[in-house]
Length: 328
Image 1 (cartoon, one colour):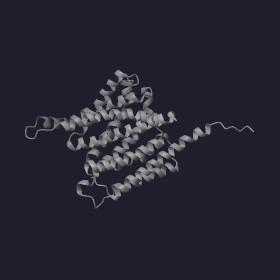
Image 2 (cartoon, helix red, strand yellow):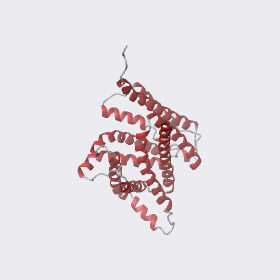
Image 3 (cartoon, helix red, strand yellow):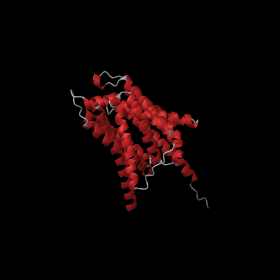
Image 4 (cartoon, helix red, strand yellow):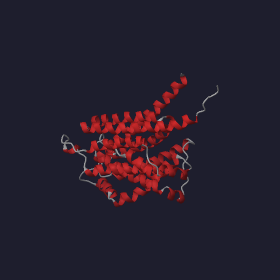
């Protein structure tokens, strides 16, 4: 009984930690972007650099953080996964900036169907009918959420551009999920090393974009302005908090994979979705319409159904391998 209790406590702790870190990331990101809407890419850059710094600090205290040796060959091998990661992260941030926090999960609602499609193309295999049913359910949920509503005030209606950001974010997240599997052998199958390469490489790729996109000059204008002094504290603290929690989210994700099951992950995702909606309404005054409620519920239902299908598929091979006692 003690062993079961200890295991349950461990799972509960990891899942709660992961949910808390994910929610903090969304809402602190949103608050910082609301205060500084002109510096989204610089905000991402700060998070990436802080993640690299925290990985170096962690490596000083534990052998479990195995940092990679930098080489041009590995950089070339990982170029695709790093490029897709930073493009997806940029669209993700732009989408969060332009939509309400509670609507954010609707705007990115096509992640699951697009991931299934990308995986199917890569493996040249056809998804099962049940998987397609789950993907169809999520797609219907997404479409329900983006249908224009006359009951919404103008400021709460997402623009076509913000919906495009959300769809492109989902697309690049899906492609990134597929590329991770083929990228791991280049870093000795180490998730930590891949995370290090991804954060460092993404920051390097993002730097020239910040300069040519005008964010660097915009930052200079804000810092040197005498007419309207810039309150830099929300941006600085937002960068620091999201940098810390982004790193913790990486660690929590690795722990979650080790100690939780697909079913546990399914229910934790459901709880996190509900909390995100409630917190969005409470913190930012987001508006929840019937359409949005149905959309989130349908997307969640499809996602949970998909997770259940995959858990059943994973359990079948193990059951088939179990020896049977047929002695008479």
